[in-house]
Image (cartoon, rainbow, N blue to C red; front, side, top):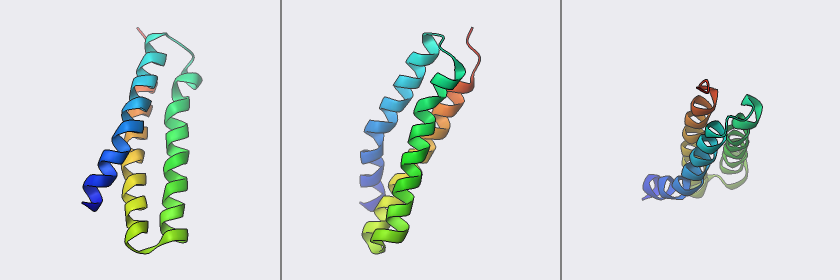
Length: 87
């Protein structure tokens, strides 16, 4: 439940980030603007990792760590989508 709950919580912002990055790419915006969602998601994952590891600890901290890892995966996918050249 700890891993599944974190995945389900990360799905909503992760899918939103992917859709936003895809829309930015479809509009043929600048590469820096297209990378903003992935950079912001990466920063949010780092903050959640810090909160889970330093502040909360224990099993609740592990949930924050799992959540940050899933958000990190969405940030990497978003970065790959943003990095592709626009045709």
